[in-house]
Length: 163
Image 1 (cartoon, rainbow, N blue to C red):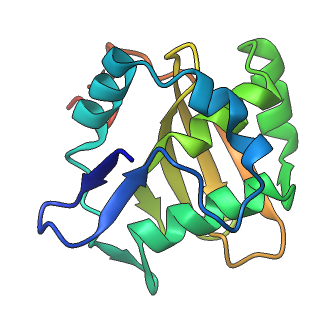
Image 2: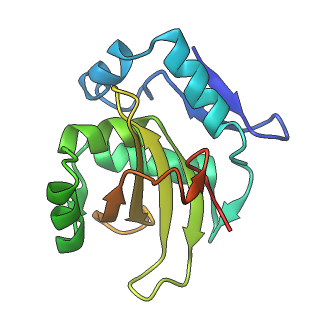
Image 3: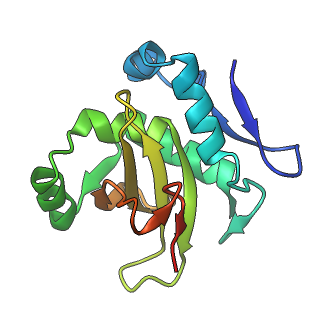
């Protein structure tokens, strides 16, 4: 088992092994892509994410676990904008699923005009970084608002905006 712990050392912010509540086939491509170098890179990039922070009653671990569960059971939808962007940027549904299973919450938008949402950094099985903005998992259907591959000129390690 491979786990990243929060800075305080008591919360797991990332776990490569599937949650027992989810069907193992949802993780098949994630498990196949678990090379040591890839795991080290993801660990290094996501290690700074503090899973103890809380967003509107969620801590990050709880939020990402609920998002993963909704994706695994198909309780999600794409906004028109997300569909358009996925076509333009050649991002497949499988890549979105993989990225969310190898992900951490990097930004929170509790007062977004269309409803509370968060920005997730995840990686596909081919080590492609993706940012996925989605609604909070409190909605019946998780809404994927937008998705894109982060521009290295605008992001430090894909998780912090350059200013």
